[in-house]
Structures are given as structure tokens and as C-alpha cells.
Image (cartoon, rainbow, N blue to C red):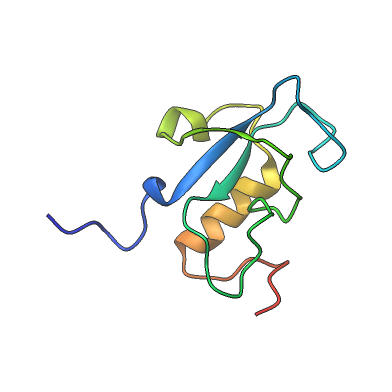
Length: 93
């Protein structure tokens, strides 16, 4: 069965833990990251453009995760933009 062009499977959720370092968001927020790296893209950034922690705790994304109040609003907006086929604002391309 072919997978739709856009799906939640293409993303992972970063859950904050005790390993919050200088590269992570300083708030206890959930962030989204692309599961598969793109050539010429930023491999070390969340959807909102923030840098990833050194060892991120990654989890599957589901519809309940998207409704979590801790989800970064900028990541949610970037996800919706990608769903419509737009590029992220922080992208160089």
C-alpha cells in the first residue's frame, strides 16, 4: 500500500529529559524533527530551527502528541507549512 506524500511517520518528537544542554530549548517543550535527513538540509535542527540536544530522546509522533500543550508552537506551524508543501522559514533553500 503506498504511503501518502505527507504523513506523521516522516517526523519524530523530541521529549525533554534531564539531558537538556546548551543546544536544546531552555523551556520544557516538545519539538518536532524530520525523521529522514535531506541532502543540503540542516541535520541538527528541529522544525522550528532550534538546535538539537546532543542525545535527543526521540519518540514516534501521533495525533495525540500534536495536541499536547507542551508542543512548540513554531514546530507546529512549521509542520502545518510542510503539510501544505511550503519550506520552513529558517531553511537556506
